[in-house]
Image 1 (cartoon, rainbow, N blue to C red):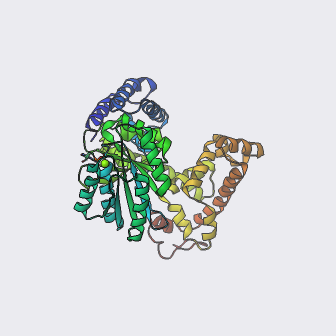
Image 2 (image 1 turned 90 degrees about the horizontal axis):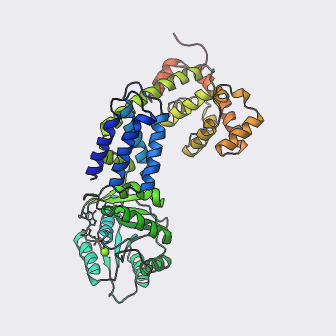
Image 3 (image 1 turned 30 degrees about the vertical axis):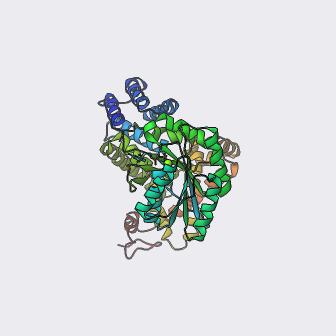
Amino acid sequence: MFESLTQALGKAFTVFQGQKKLTEKNMEEGLRAVRAALLEADVHFKVARNFIQRVKERALGEEILKSVQPGQQFIKIFHDELTALMGPEEPPVTFSPSGFTVYLLAGLQGSGKTTTCAKLALFLRKKYRKNPLLVAADLQRPAAVDQLAALGKQLDIPVYTEPTTARPPELCKRAVGHARSAGHDVAILDTAGRLHVDEELMAELEEIQAQVRPHAIYLVSDAMTGQDAVQSAKAFHERLPLTGVILTKLDGDARGGAAMSIKAVTGRPILLVGVGEKPDDLEPFHPERMAGRILGMGDVVSLVEKAQEVVDREEAEKAQAKLLKGRFNLEDFYKQLQWIKKLGPLKKVMGMLPGMGGLLDQLDFEDKHFKRLEAIFTSMTPAERKRPEIIDGSRRRRIARGSGNDVQAVHDLLKQFKMAGKLFKQVGKMDPRALEGLAEGGPPRKGFRTHGKRRR
Ligand SMILES: Nc1nc2c(ncn2[C@@H]2O[C@H](COP(=O)(O)OP(=O)(O)O)[C@@H](O)[C@H]2O)c(=O)[nH]1
Ligand SMILES: [Mg+2]
């Protein structure tokens, strides 16, 4: 999978090797080689351009870690951006709350729709204990119906068929009615494709959609066709609300362009991938794993991750020491929040203190909330973070505007900051030996007290 891209990237990265520091100038040659590799792999040119820009900016802006080489850090940045480009990870399938789920599969002829219908049925039966019905709604050629019927027979999954004189939208409606009354909890519609996107195909799909209101619409797309896969995905999405893409034939010599560009171009995620002709060859799509496969440098990535971890830990420990003494500013608070987000140690610590539960709930560590806090923090000047007391009304308004929030959100953050100060002071009065145990996730050590004198 993606061998030539992996090789070309590996070669491009050698330019970064041995550099003491990455600069705009010494990255130029390497980035040019990266760009060539991406375009050669059929990555959409705009996607490639924006992607390289992001990687470059991060490479220039990030502090160099002590224990790794800048070239290695570059690879990690590349890996993270690649993961982000194809992500975030989403569940491969979802089910209708009604308990009966209809999936519609659409795509160009030869993209793998019929095969994928059978694979999906098997996947749902094996992983989710569903009882699917396959629906042969591609009536362009009688062979298409036979193909699905044969696959169903092989897998022992029922297939709904009608003579090819039927109209697909009505057939689908009848098929769904039959599926319900026969006790199926899933129906999968195999629809007709054309060699290219055309009006007739789209109109038929729209009509099917209007008739049966499928829970999800998957576009089946052939990874081997590179940019064509991306362009047709775009065209389909303009007419049909696609849930996501199933990218097929990744086992062949697909060049990676479709996998890397589809999300960026269409906004719809890849949810599942076809990795062979057999009914078992269907897998959920994991952006990070895919990035790993494309790069083929898992060892470098984990090396840098470990180095990063050490730095984070050192910083967090410093911040924590300050917190516990009650001498800390918003900068420390921010660092600690980032650390909490990652590991959650203080939350655990605080949750175990008597009477802290309620307060803790007010300190909200939800991801969405955290993103907002992050935006507010980054809109503050360093001086404001160091000396929060200078943040008056007009500064609050500026920070709110800069971070895309209302002033209330800034008030809330400052309030939380004050509250956290109180909490941390209390934590600081605890026996440090007890805290040690907690921070590692273990139970509190015996015999610690939250107040009063320390034990000898
Ligand atoms: N290698 C490989 N072949 C696949 C995959 N998915 C489908 N195919 C093959 O692609 C061809 C077309 O598939 P089919 O399901 O008939 O496409 P449809 O016209 O969209 O229904 C068949 O020969 C399939 O075996 C896959 O993930 N990997
Ligand atoms: Mg077919």
